[in-house]
Structures are given as C-alpha cells and as structure tokens.
Length: 248
Image (tube, rainbow, N blue to C red; front, side):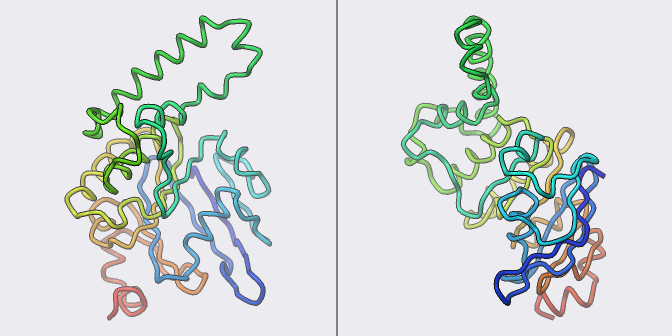
C-alpha cells in the first residue's frame, strides 16, 4: 500500500466531520471517493495533505507516518493536491504557470550563484518538458496566453499539467472535472489513466459515470464514515450506496 489511513477522527465544534475513517490505497491505481455533500470527503483530503490536523488516528505514506506533518513537508514527499476551485495564476502565461510548478524552484539561492550553468540547464529542460505536457493535453498552442483568458475546461487541463510538472507520486484530486462538458471530462480522465503507470490518484468526483469507467476501486462516505468499498461493479450493485448516494 502506498497510502494507509487508519481510524482518522476530526470534529469542528460539535460537528463530527470524520468518524474513524480508514482506507488503503494501492500503488498505481485510480481510487474514487464519493458521497453526499457534507459527508467529509474534502475534510479527509485536507487531513491527508496536512491542511487540517486530525484529532486521532494515523496516516502512512510509503510506510512513513505523516499524520503531524505540515503541507509543504507532505508535498516534498511527492503528494500533490488540487482544490474544488481551479487555482491557476491568472496574470501569468500558461507556460509561466507550468514552470512555476516545477521542482527546479526548490534549488537553493546559494546553488544559483555557485553553479548558474547547471540551474540554467535545468530551467531549459523544464521549458521543454512543460511544452511537451501542454502538447499532450492539447493546449500547447496556448503557452503564451494568459491563464485568465482560458476557458474553464482549459484551466482544468492547465491545472492537471501543473500537477504533472511537480512529478508527484500521489495526487489528491478534488473534483477535477466539475463544471465541464462530458467530452472534455472524459479526455481529462483518459490523461489521468495514462499517468497511472507512475502516479497514484485519489479522486473526489460527483460524476459517477466517469468514476465507474476509470476507477480501479471506490470508497463511499456518508456522515463522516466509510460506508462502502469495492470495485466500480461492486459499488453499482451495493444497496446501501444506491439508497444513500445514488437515490434509490
């Protein structure tokens, strides 16, 4: 297992958001996380990525306990997350957004002065890699456009491209295709599936058809608890899921 979440609990005042949540994620899989609004899905993602500290329980990534780590520490381990609202740098060009996401920016200021040639070489490699990713996402022709001029769907593609630039081992996706047309939604998940050979994905998504087509396994949440788990076929036939989430 690349990620193991065990008995996580979190409450806000008198509201229990996570009530003993446990899940195991296998490496190089796409795992869906579904459930009604307010069931605790985004809170769980926030806990895994370090934006919220759990009250109890544990989270292990590649065998390492990350339960008390800060978001930047978790990110450096190779865990990347996205948000419900697309976050791109609207006053930067598409290519600049991609380069900003690169790990080359972790290069220390001392190294920049001591070995500028190596830094320049890495930056040139980043530019080439960014252009290749944009081309693969069918937005290579938009490299010099401002991110603010992109459509909502194109911004989703850019956001995914920025994730790829970080070279993550694990991605937490919070509604990656919300608000975009079915054709583009399928295209994005086709791109995600291609990345599965080197990356693992945990995806919150309300588009059930998409998850059924592309996920290896699916967890179902309701009222802060995991209520079902299985393959897409098993989830589709699960009576509790049908009653609670799919509307009977």
